[in-house]
Amino acid sequence: MKKLIILTLIVVSFANCSSEFQPSSLLGSWVIKKMEANTPDISPAILKGAEEEAYSMVYEFLEDGKFKMTSNAYPDGALGTYTLNLESNHLKVSFKGSEDINEIVEEYQISELSDDSMKWTMDLREMGNIVFTINRK
Image 1 (tube, rainbow, N blue to C red):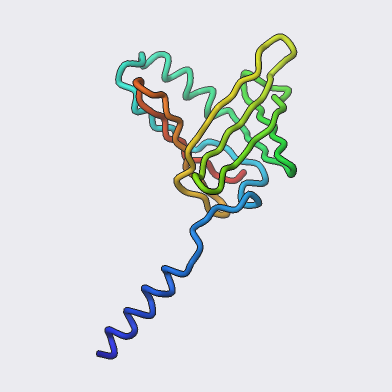
Image 2 (image 1 turned 120 degrees about the vertical axis):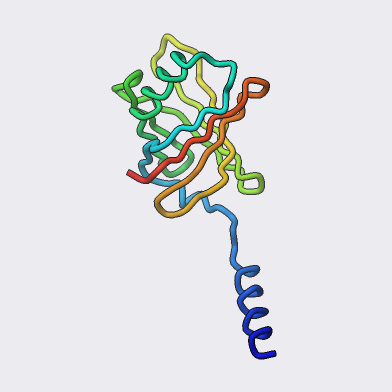
C-alpha cells in the first residue's frame, strides 16, 4: 500500500509539471546538429546539398519576435521575424536574404524544447518531412 501511495504521488507530480513551451526558451543562438529527411522522392544529391546548407546555419532568436539567420547562403545574415504559437507549438520564421529576393517563410512543429536542445519537424506535405535536432550554440 505504501508503494502505491508513493507511485501515485510521483504520477501526480509529473502530471502537474507544465510541458508548455515558453517564448523565452527560444531566445539565443542555435545550430542544427542533425537532419533526418523522410523524403523518399527527393534526389539524394539534392538532400546532400540541403544538408550541407542546414549544418552551416546559425539561428538567432531575439526579443520582440526578431530573427537572424546566417549560413553559407547568407554569410551576412538574413533578418526577419518569428512567431511561436504556444497552443500548437508551431514556429514560423520569415526572412529576406537580400533586397532582390522575396520573403522566405518556413514553418516548423516543435516537438521538444529544453534549455539546450530542440527538435523541429518541417512538413513537406506529400513529399514527406524533415526533422531537425537543434542545439544551443
